[in-house]
Image (tube, rainbow, N blue to C red):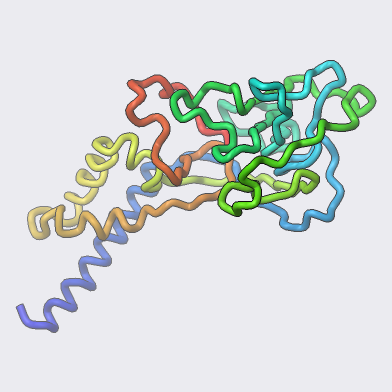
Length: 248
């Protein structure tokens, strides 16, 4: 095969890869809600807003979330499902909140991911009028690692950023099912690939070309396929977290 033939072969191969990727996208599409971050933190937000950080929605009779040592947690994000687009199998109303402890692991227990000693997931099914809500939150202590940028929160405790949600379609990526259901995902890729390449091109020859098209997105979203930076938390857990769904 001369150099000209090689170039033509590579061009044809790339077109085949594009067709394979397009079909995989079609077969793995699932609905989600994309959340767009509004970077202007000067806009005043109410306790009912969908947001990152800030003052949370909190009924007067509800104890403010604390860690196992009684220290107040930081509001990471708040989702108001009554104002979000509707998504099947997710709440249709109410407010869901994620609180984290301000330490070097943001409250995560590396030995038990669902241990909420240092983080909290709170769902308020009923949304009360403002007169029945707390008007202030406890002071949050800076952690001992705050001077290190990699361990500090990406926003100040008094900052809050609005999130705007819209319905969207998500497709599989290499930081979700690729790692958790590797065999299932690779089987799908092989099945689709054989339709286009048959015996002419070995699957191994285009394996990397295909999988390179499925990089992580790191979007804010509800539902769809999750993205991970340090591995899949369900992996190696013997199905313990299989019933969990991606909320945020």
